[in-house]
Each structure stands twice: as structure tokens, then as C-alpha cells.
Image 1: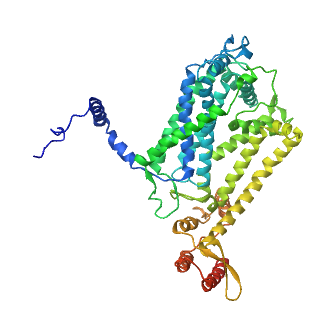
Image 2: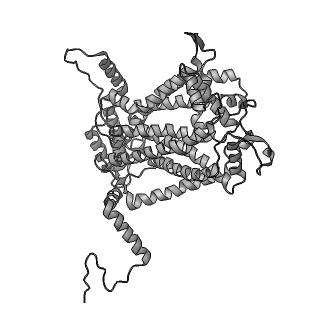
Image 3: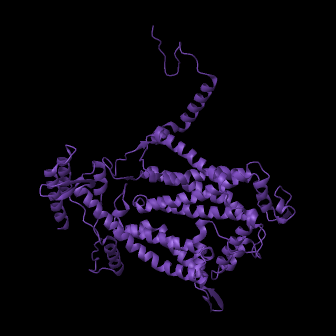
Length: 572
């Protein structure tokens, strides 16, 4: 006899669920009835994400921040953010009895007295470095593939602000042990701030609470490091993820992939499982780094003292560009004007770095204004298909790299037995000429790669098979690419330079003329995309000769003839 039951009544012959299951189910129903969270979970679970290795860079940054948060929470229970002088009595014998601040004392105790403290501290530092590096590489991927274009301009701004906050978070944490290295770093920051006209001295006194080093700078940095900056980072990550879901994820070109259709895996259960596994991989790699690779042995340098400054002190890599900019500034740039000393050796580097940061921050809006492109873009571009943008990115990377290398100018001079002046002058010249040369070389490489793609689509790729024709001529057999590869090679956007028109008075304003000139420069030296007729002819030609899996001599002769014909068409 069949058992009937309603929605609220369990079958009579079914065993009752365990007590724990009933409690969890009741709690879930209670929450869902009051929040309707199940609908949101179902909608989110159906969200599709494409599968490409370059998209993992953002996940590396995300999971590294989770490791930073976990390890940092552990460290907050033992670190004492105070500059009160004390005498060390812990397990590290070389410093026992030495006078130091409470911050340095607690950092030593975390490293040598607390079980697992050194491992967690090193994991925290390595995770912070991976976090900054992950954001940087992720933004490079977004830039070079054009994933910042409409409708993702705001997400680019949020991502770059996250990058700046991550560097600030790293620097504040780097300064907390109050050791010789961090003290020198703070002294450099203090000098940069004081070098700013009008507001420099007052800003320094506000930050340090008086003359450097102040009485409570460690406590203020600690508040920034564990409270204010993490809250901002978490909030921006949440907004970044929401916008990514709302705007859809970008994807590379391929069959069935359009601006409206995303090809990939849903979050539940496939992508969620992959993300969970990837988190444990990132966590494990950071744990291995913290276990086997020592980082920042601050006990070797001792507490902060301005007298024993050594030439080998370097900032963490992500902040090195600021130190390098100061080192590359020419000496004797101090000018007395209006009864004040203007330190252009500091003002100019700070202004250049600020202009560089603002240019990167607002680049999506700058490019959209130059090109006049108001379309939505959900297909990521191959860098070679946007040669001007790729060349600009390469020039920016070279500019940053030279500043970054300049932070180690003293080590370069000592390790390679060079003069300090020679290293500085070489880097100064490279700072000016490097981005210019990088721009033109990168652009020519992109155009050459586009020509190579055109050849592969029209004539196929080289197979290495050499056949002999009846007339004695030897030719190489080409094989056509598959549908997916051909789709990727021919996916080139066609967008003409901006054409400006006269206004109501019949005039073209100067800024519109400048905009048109910039647009022509952005789109110059382009290759005309292949026509559909050329693509269809190449596909039919490849299908005709690839059906039997082998090419005999007459077919090879026809292939060579068609190749020459197609080459002539391309030249025309």
C-alpha cells in the first residue's frame, strides 16, 4: 500500500533523521524563511566562470590575503605595539640583557619563545609578498588583455587601489618590529614627507607625533596594519567580487564564446571545488616558503639605531621603486626661493611617481576618451592584437623596473665591482631611453606576431614533412589549424580612428584636434583583419587536403601553388 505524505509530514515508514540533522535542517529553514538566502545561493551557484590559467592570478592574491589574515590574527595575540624601553630576557642569547623597545622585544619572543611563532611570522611575511605580487600580476593580465574596458573601468580602479593598499599594508607590517631596517625605512619616508613644500614638516609631525621617531609611531602603524587597512582591503575585495559577478567574467575568443555567452564551469559544484583545492595549494606553498626560506631575520640587525646604517639595507621589493626614484634624482637640486628651501631632489621624484600612479589608475578612461570606444567588451584581447596598448604597458613596466633596480644600486655596484656613479648614470639614462625603446620594440613584435598569425590561418602551420615534386622541387607540407585555433587567430577587432566633427559654430576645438591626433596614433601601423572570404577559402583548402591524412606529390604541388597565390593576395 502506498504511503502518502504532505510537504510537512514525513513518510510513516521512513526512519527519523538524526538529532543533529534535524537541528541543522530546522536552523537552515529558519534562516531561509527570513532571508530567502537559498534563492541567492542558487543564482550564484549557476554563475559560470571561464577556465584559463591566467585567471588564477587573481585567486592567488585572494587566497594569499586569507593566509595573511589567518597568520596575522595569531600574531596579534603576542605582539606588543609599544615603544616603551625594556631589557630583553628571552631565549635568544646574543641579545639577552640588551635595551630595546617593547615592540622589538615581543617580535623576538614570537620568533624564539612561542611554539610555532617563527613559522607563523615567516608565513605571514611570505603571504604578504605573494599577495602584493598576485595583485600586480593580475592587473598586468587585465591590462594586456584589455579586460579593463567598459563595463569594468570601476573594477580596474578598485583593483589598483587594492594594490596601493596592499603595499601600504606590507610597509606598515614591515615597520612594526622596530628593527634597524624598518627604522631606516621610516626615516626615508620621514625625509620624503619633510621635503614636500609648505605641508611637509606639519605632515611629519602629525604622522610621528613630534620629531622623528616620535613616541608612538609603532602604535599608530599597528592600528593601521591590523584595523584600518584590512577593513578597507576586505571591503574593496567584496565590492570587486560583486562587480565581477554583475559584469560577467571576461573570456578569450573561441567557438560559442560571445559577449553574451560565457563558456566555462558553474560555481557550484565544479568551480567551488577547484577554488577550495587551489586555496590549499596556495596555503601549502606559503607554508613551505615559511619553513625552508628565511625572511627578514631582524635579530641579525638589532633594534633601530641611526648610527650603524649599512649600505646593504633594502626595502621590500614592492616599495623599492620609491627608494629608487630618490636615488636617481640628480644631486644639488635644492633651491632657495621665497625664503624657503625647495628640495627638488624630493619634489620631482614624488611628482613623477604620483603622475605615474594617477596615469595607471585612470588609464581605462584615458584610452576610452582617445579611441571613442563606447562598446561593452567581454572578450579578452590577445596582447598582440592591440599593439599600441601592449607597447604602452611594456614601457610602463620598464619604467617601474628601472626605478625598482635603482633601489639596489649600491648592491649592484659592490657585487659587480662597478663605480656608484656609473651605476646611477646608467640607470638614469635607462629610465629615459628604456621606455621609449621598449615601446617601439614591443609594437614591432606585436605586428610581426599578427603577420605570423595571418600566415598560419591562410597557409597552415609547418609540419616538418618535406615532399618532392615531379619536377624535382622540394616543398614542405602545411597543415591547417583546427577550428578553435583558427577562431583565436582571426578574432581581431576592427575599430577605426576617431573622426571629430565641427561644433555648432563650424569649428573644431583644439582639444578635439588633439584627441583625433591621439586616436590616429593609437591605431596607426595596423594590419587589416582577414576577410571572411579569405578565411573560408583557407578552411576549404585545408579540408580538401587534410581529408586523407597524407599528402602526395601532386597535392603538395597544388598546396605550394595555392600558398603562393594566397601570399600574393595578402600582399595586395
